[in-house]
Length: 287
Ligand SMILES: C[S@@+](CC[C@H](N)C(=O)[O-])C[C@H]1O[C@@H](n2cnc3c(N)ncnc32)[C@H](O)[C@@H]1O
Image 1 (cartoon, helix red, strand yellow):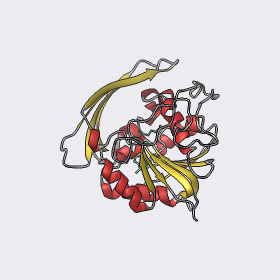
Image 2 (cartoon, helix red, strand yellow):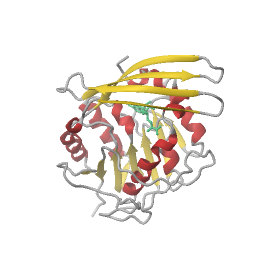
Image 3 (tube, helix red, strand yellow):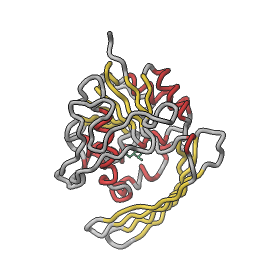
Image 4 (tube, helix red, strand yellow):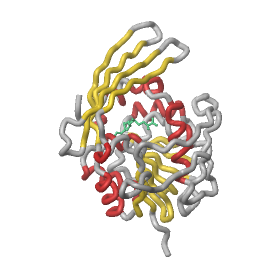
């Protein structure tokens, strides 16, 4: 199936499987890196808006030090996240259009931005981030794919729990037409319930792959000072050191460890790992 993200079964009737399909631990290292980037803002970062928060698997690692508001299109995914992150505010909404009527120190748009496939929509997402970002604050965007570096890829993953539930998946991602701004991921999920019944679900997702120039141009047009993880021109850029301190700017709270949560999901102390793609928008402080 290709279409609107709110039509994908993965985030609707299969949402309950998300913690096994893409376990929270797998987000620990990137979340640690993002925490370091956030701490490089010109203002202390405490209140964070997570747009497209999904199952809350990034949030679960960030929330020890930060107060998070989580927004997602899917009520089912918000329910999954609500169980993992009962201490976070959850709001149903579209990252393109939502207006909460308040500002945050930082805005995070992790891999959910993959579901934005038109530059007019990406412009809206970035404008949403700007509208919610305090002067001196920072917005970070983590698309899985950008056009400049896209290569077809295959992968697999999944996990099981103690009740006998098991989810596994295979994916193949390729570009049907390099002239446009989206690529395609074909998934096959094998989902085994605790009673042994198995369902196999195939689903095709359309995902955005914009050029670096498009990202940088839209960030600047919205009013942000743009930066990229690998530099505007792809050569050098913002780097966080492996010990969690920023090498170009060190925030007061520059460490990014995720410590044991009651649910055990965020218990590992992860070394920060830079995401494949990272775009940063800094909102200038007045004066
Ligand atoms: C890959 S999941 C995100 C996983 C997330 N990073 C986590 O920590 O669990 C993608 C999510 O993006 C959400 N999404 C897609 N388009 C959206 C939109 N326009 N506005 C808000 N959420 C959106 C989907 O509902 C889904 O929950």
